[in-house]
Image (cartoon, rainbow, N blue to C red; front, side, top):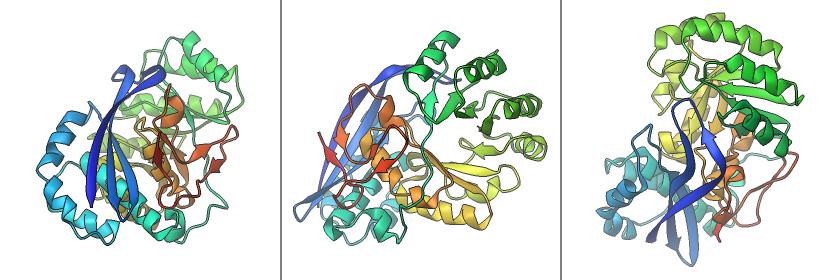
Length: 336
């Protein structure tokens, strides 16, 4: 099995702001795994919050390259188990795992959702994210991209005013994501007002480690609360029970599709809502997320929609949120 690593700097259509930072570019690592004339592609985006860079992932993979190329590939889950013994970051494991699944499906000539015996007759549509910016810019971004479902990034001194103002311009459903910027009392207060403004749920309002505050919010919030930064790996799913109404699984954070599939099942057993989110990936990462759609309650897979120029073909998202799955097997990815 041959492995090739590619570094990309993805330019965003607009400056993307959240409570912690703003950026115009997204660095991303693409892993290419080839076997028997087929190539699978996986992705992991760099992330400053988790102290992950593309260069570090490339260096991390260096010592593994020979062993990986000599690995007798059978299934992605077996490969992931092998990778788990190598003390790799979850981000690098994710990129390799996604490439392995894309390769496996292409070798089987089946999309992953069929391999997993799921149907794409019904699935949630993705939200489109409006990052923090001056309110006039947020209005312009929303109006320039008509969409039935928006995620509004919050964490400012005038969060309610932002949502109230945006509501004047659309009847679309809102979700809000405070990225750990609120405290418990602020969240409970905001939830009552946000519910009146047509907000569906609040994502990660409190600091990830504030479990006492999260429990209070869970009990008293007028809106469902979805964990993001509080749910990183498989072991966090049970922790979220009784503190959140659902979890947002990020493939890069948990280590790929292999652990994500287990996290979905664990969450469903606990009656937690399941969501998968993106990290401003290209169509490589988004196409992998799309394979999970039949198993999810919510999805945030607008990453490639936020880019000025994509680097791959795969899953397409139409103007009404419908997903067009490619005819290739696996995640259906080809690089441009």
